[in-house]
Length: 462
Picture 1: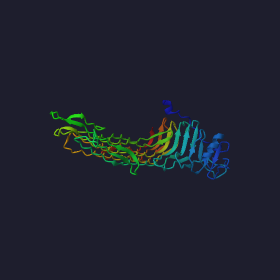
Picture 2 (picture 1 turned 90 degrees about the horizontal axis):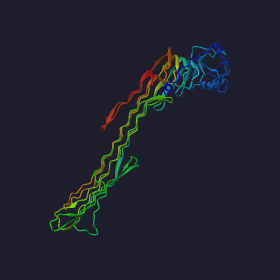
Picture 3 (picture 1 turned 180 degrees about the vertical axis):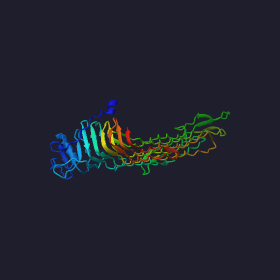
Picture 4 (picture 1 turned 120 degrees about the vertical axis):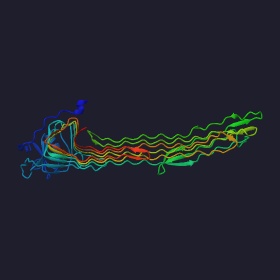
């Protein structure tokens, strides 16, 4: 519902730490010189902020962090505040205006889920790593359903998003005839044991559509030709009268061209609780195989022939249908660079510089492979003793594949939010360039529409 989409209203911010609270009674301590086996005191600090968060949650305390660079990513604990930039050169440890650096090797650098009790992050420069995988994104802070979170006196920076992969073009199939369509048999004046009541039509062609490496894609078979008819001519001037009419071929009509495949769409990105989803193009649909050609019908004898029984010619066999064009794969969307992605999280940003870097370019889609034509039907018998011969049909053209869409460029957005907007106080945003889209292209009568470039915005409502 609307309330769930907007999230809860923001809670009052947690108060900053006081100098007299920098003691073991109020906090767990972290220093570059610390150790995972230590107790988290000033004399024996921990080395990891993440480990300190777990201890502080159980003890209901803050986390105090010395100056220095900490290469880790954090999963925030509800109600556990973190204070960075402490001067730890003396045993007393002191609050300063300096900052600690959280340099995360992964994205997001900080993840906050269901932070509903006042939680404050002071004096930190947060840096998310550049994406390294195709279509990968970099997010500084991902906050979901967190209405009590404050960042104060520091910075949040997302790294570079990665380019999406280009699609792989559809494979061109090969039509490999195994047997050509046969010619029908010629008519005879008098039936014999070798040429009984009906002359059978010629056999249709047989073949295969093969992948480039020889793997079978489909088997094709043309229709057989129709059989001949038996006719009688008397001496009373009655023209040829059928004793048995010619039989039609099994198909009876030419091979139809196949159905073309539908086009895929250009991609559009989305963002939600799980993070950023690139705008991948969608796949086109492959064509279907061309219909096999029909066999020719049997024919009647020429009325100039003599008296008696006569056979008409049988029809030739039909040709093979063409192989379809195969759709390629779509282009993948570029990754994003998002300084803060806040989903139903009106995060407070007090004295924070939020920076996004460049988004990744979209990947190119594909046109699909070309279909193949069918093969011709069997040869017609040029027999002067018969009339109304019906020729066989070639197979239909294979269906054209649809295009597979281009991927969209990834955005560069300092603050992207869904639900209540973050609350900015003495804060500013810096943005990089959105990832490039892919220009429209045309080939062999097909058009692959352009995909959009990624946005470059300071604050964007999703």
